Each structure stands twice: as C-alpha cells, then as structure tokens.
Amino acid sequence: MGLKLYKKDTSAPCRSVYMVLEILNITDVEYVNMNLVKRDHYTDEYLKMNPQHTIPTLKDGDFVIWDSHVITTYLVNQYGKDDALYPKDLKKRALVDLRLHFDNSVLFAALKAAMVPILYHGEKTFRKENLDNIKTGYEFLEKFLTGLWLTGDSITLADICCVANISSLNEILPIDNVLYPKLTAWFERCSKQEFYIKGNVPGLQSFQELLKSSIQ
Image (tube, rainbow, N blue to C red; front, side):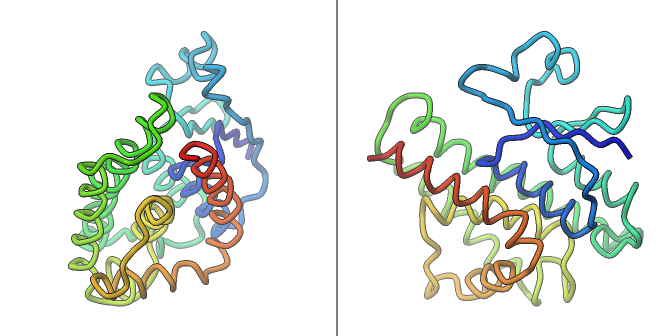
C-alpha cells in the first residue's frame, strides 16, 4: 500500500484521519511527525509536495493530497470495503459533504481562530469573539442532530471529522449539556467508539497538555 502521512498529533484534522485509518483497519502507514515550530512544513521538499504547507498531507505511492476531508474521503473510496462511511448514493453523500463543509468552514475555522492568538501571539485568555464563534458551531450542531448521528442513523465521515474538532473545541469551551443536550449525547456516543478511543484520544490528550501549558 505504501501510505505515508505527514502529521501532528495535537491537530484535530490529523486526528480525523487517524480515526478513519483505524475504522478501515489500515495499519501499513508510515507516520512523519511535523514540528511546526521548527517550520518543517516550510522546507523545500515539503513545499514541493504541498505548496499550501498544511497538515495533514498524505502520500499514496507517488500520489499526494492534503486537506483532511479530501484525505478521509479518498481513503474510504480507495480502501474501504463498503461505502458506509461515505455513501455512493448521491443524496446521502451530499448530506455528508454538507457537514464536511460545515466542519471546515465553521468548526475548524473557530478552532483555528481561537488557538492562533494563544499559540503564536502569547495571549493567555481566549478572545470573546472567538468563544462566540465556538458557541455558534455548537448551536448549529444542536439543530443538525435530528437522529443518532449527523446524517441519520449510522456513523459517517461527517461524524468522524466533526468530532475531531468538537473534542478540541470542548477543551476550550466545555459543551453545556443543558443548552446543547443533543450535541452532548452525540459527543458521548462518539467518545465510546473504538475508533475514537484509539484514533482521537491520544492526540486529544496531547492537545490538552499543549493548551494547559499555553494558558498558564
């Protein structure tokens, strides 16, 4: 198979890829840890491979892609035994895509906006406008959840990708179970899944440690 994943464990997008690899039982992967402080993602070699210098980046032989959503959909399409995580039915797939775009434009955007001042500008408290953006994400998810999972009665890439970001956002602004009972229940269901425990929890613990050291 020859997969190589350039990653950082504290990154929620990277952890979404870990979870998909876990649920697909893909173990033949070479992991390359990226030190962003040392600007590993700006080396000539990396920029030639990924001009956007983002993580994660996946190499499958000579084929290179980045953006966690693209990587996860590719893995399911290329290596999944079925289409349960990313349905071939166009209407069902459109619902998953809808949530994936929401994850990128709302949840990850809120996470990035909240963390950049902390990690790169030395701020010790989160800005109100960034906390408000997180609340907005919670409010939308509460409305989206009309079944057990984000697009119905079975887990899809929508749940996997969104919960990676939600698990990090919850460390910044804990989910209020009174205001968001459906979101709370969904998050608890996700947290009990084996792929979450193996693929997300270790990196989330690293994120917790990073957060603690950054805001003390």
